[in-house]
Length: 212
Image (cartoon, rainbow, N blue to C red; front, side, top):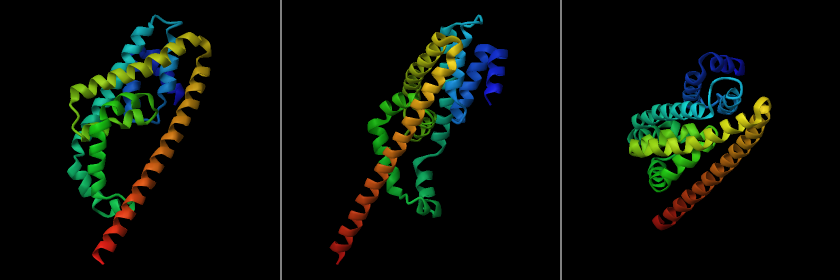
């Protein structure tokens, strides 16, 4: 995959970076670390500038996020409740009430989540879907997306430009950070699910005692 990324960037320059970042937002397994750090390195031996690469990458981030936001708008809470009310919801141990809880959480924390999650691998793409589902105003969503993406893109592109031919070392460092963040996020999610499950179990027991 890396060879394909390099060929696209070498052939199309900033347009290629825009397209690759857009696709990366839609398919998170594509490594943005490679695109951004190598893009920074390219500014040291081509006519591309750091500002131009940052602009192309950020525009690609915004375009990809807008597509996923649109997908979230289609996946309305009502449809999600219907889905969770069926067999799949039971298999996943989700309930319809979880949708309302998620909506409440996103209403309180959504803006900061959209902004800061742009610096968290994989989640930086997926956060656009709940933003669309929650009906966050598109203008605010876009501003937060651009702001958060600008920080991530600028950091990696500037690091790649500064490292020059040693840009792969920067990418390795970022990969270490990415793995640590993903493990932390997974642990946090598991903790939240266990707490939620414990509260639901306590509520059921309390209800049963009250009925008796």
